[in-house]
Image 1 (cartoon, rainbow, N blue to C red):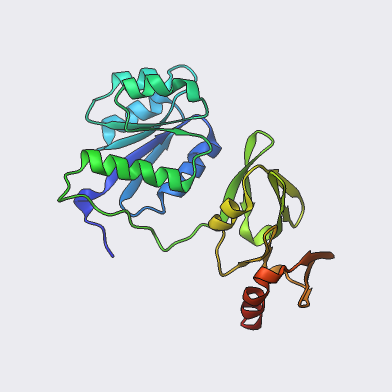
Image 2: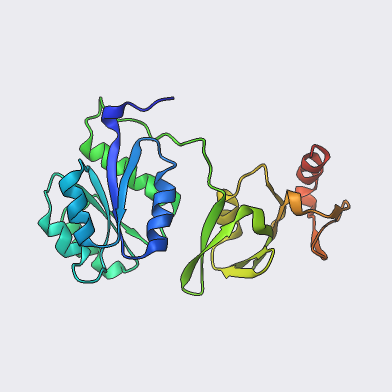
Length: 242
């Protein structure tokens, strides 16, 4: 289904962290009513882009060198709306004083981003013109997870299985193990369903990496992964049809 071109939201991303720009751009590319016109690593680049492009919305980091996001926001045309993106909760009041559409705390989830785009549409696009948020059928082949104070990229093709342990999750890839404090259910929601299979409340496996299986266990890289009773029928059905 095509989105009406006059309802496309032209946006830019302004953030001095390359990985933060990449994560946000990857999320936004899934929303067909949003067009990422460009990304900028500082306010100077953003100023130049605003002078050459028709921009509706800026995703703006606050803590940047030389010119902060707050200073930049005060200097631009008030018709251009802002969604602040930051790792610092204490700037929220300043952000909303500047009539920001929203204030997103990093790491920014896709679900939270959708809420911000919907808020922008409801507030700044006439109801009769407002497009529904549509998603591209093109899917990413990786995710980012927070581990050891940074966001780490994990390619789905490298992922063998995922294990939940109390209040954190381990993701086992071909060459390393990444630990994150996300829940296994939140990780599962980001995975392509046709490539991964939940076999236990504490385990998700990559179907292509399964080396052998019985009714009780799946083996991947010499690791015996249990199949719980509640998932047994789903597992059997999926693996019988592979």
